Image 1 (tube, helix red, strand yellow):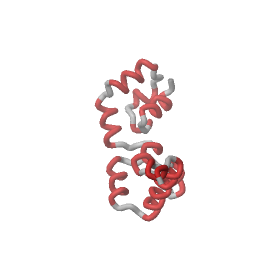
Image 2 (tube, helix red, strand yellow; image 1 turned 180 degrees about the vertical axis):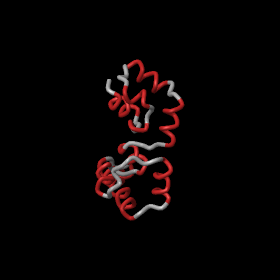
Image 3 (tube, rainbow, N blue to C red; image 1 turned 60 degrees about the horizontal axis):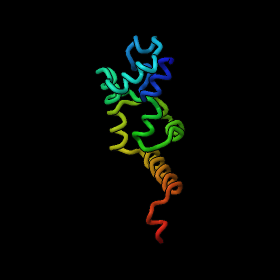
Image 4 (tube, rainbow, N blue to C red; image 1 turned 90 degrees about the vertical axis):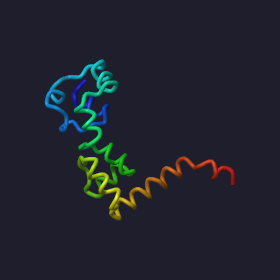
Length: 115
């Protein structure tokens, strides 16, 4: 598979990977090996970032669309994500609340069914 596909499956930002990973095709066996026994560069990248958009959105508890609407559609490090979560700007609070409400509406809790 292409490096871009492998990076997506691993949940990592391709430009932050080693050059060798970026220019080599990855077999399914190699992908399984990376998932089961990640090398140090992969462990570090997953821990510190920069993270791709889907991972940034997941860590912030918002949608990718919310990232785009607020001009945050870029890779962020774990530290940058932590800072945003600690000092939540209004757009982030609004996006987190909106997603939580959407999820609740899609999957009401058991309490709602008992009433």
